[in-house]
Image (tube, rainbow, N blue to C red):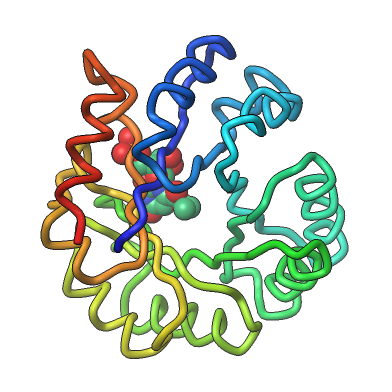
Length: 211
Ligand code: O7E
């Protein structure tokens, strides 16, 4: 079944923990990015680790290999289970994240194409296909592909085969869960859940729709 991943882009530690805890029975992982970590520090991992769910660090790491390695070490030492990195920095830099992830028994995912409208300014003309190819050659565990463009997901699936595809952009950005869930291994959903009047009820509803 397609995983449901909660994008926990909240700025308040207690609210974030409360939303994650209430949604935990209906989700498969929690994605934590800059908004929450910059507001609370890496110790937010300690608050979330009791959920018993994989924690994905979405720092879209994009630096030279050595710095990527240092960032990745900090991420996994803090207790995260997976990391998301950019591939446009090149195979050596992306591979640094993958190697650290695997050394820690974790996973690394490479952004192949983003979901917002402006993404088409640069992720076109075969760029996303090259990033997906890079993800395969770096032995990444999977890629990120846009729920807002299901046709692009299908194209990128041809390149990555059985590798994991996680897809943000459902709900608030206009992506349709029913359509996308058939194409990917996991959907990443933020605002539709945490801005709902009852986040747990919304997470449960979404968890029923996916295939
Ligand atoms: O639109 P929302 O509120 O459902 O949130 C979507 C989340 O996915 C949010 O954290 C955003 O930063 C992230 N995201 C995208 O929306 N589009 C992308 O192309 C990539 C990501 C992302 O998570 O990248 C790494 C997985």
